[in-house]
Length: 103
Image (tube, rainbow, N blue to C red; front, side, top):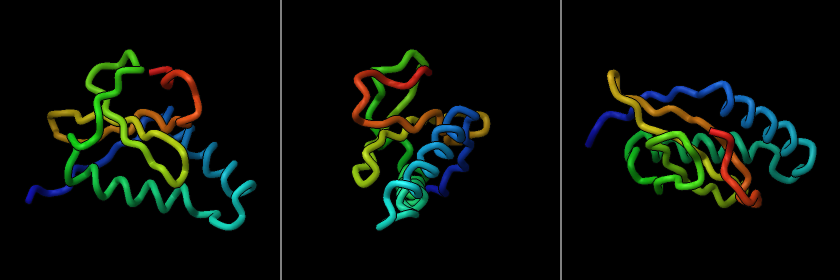
């Protein structure tokens, strides 16, 4: 089994996460920590199996993958970078939007 890859969060992804967490805490009182919990859960998975997400065809940035986080109705967009090998989170985007994030 491989060692988990380190994770970097782009400025855009960090902004998306902050905005969604803030909205979620105000509007989803029964599960105020769901965004953080789900991101932690999904990161444990992609750090071990980074190529498990589907290739994102709705963005211009190359080599981006996405994984759906059903509980919070969002896609997490990420890519695997080399030298050193790591994961970069590039966007967190609602699954109800008709197009992908501006990346």
